[in-house]
Image 1 (cartoon, one colour):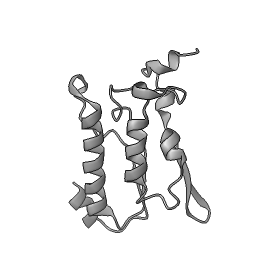
Image 2 (tube, helix red, strand yellow):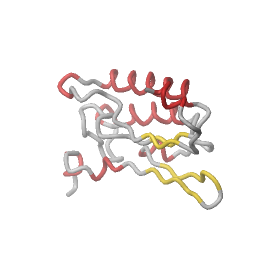
Image 3 (spheres, helix red, strand yellow):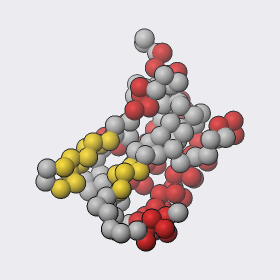
Image 4 (cartoon, one colour):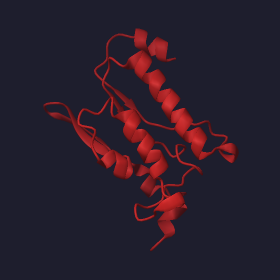
Amino acid sequence: MLNQINKTPQFDFLIWRGDIPPHDIWINSRSEAIYLHHEVSNLVYKYLGHVPIYPALGNQESSPVNSFPIPSISGYDSISFLYDEVQKAWSRWLPNNPSSVNLGAYYSTVFRPGLRIISLNMNYCNRLNWWLLINS
């Protein structure tokens, strides 16, 4: 698929909407989530590295699925395992490597004058993210 996209007429940029892991949520794990994100990021870069890419996280990237703990959660239950990985993977596409990626997988960057790309981590609004019940 990536090879075929690479052969299409030139496009200005690509928006990558996430949801990398397969949807067999009963067997996902943190290590698999990190592995898949790393491998797919490398494949996307291999085939489309010449194109500006603006990634985002889908709800499947966390483990367990839909689990995006609020920033005040630390230790084993935090989501930092994933945000640390995306910070590394996305740094090749985001010019200034914004620290907000590591804080919550969101960023804002200028593609060209007059066009700003804003990527929000909407998993903090997902009704299936039970972490939102804390302090509700």
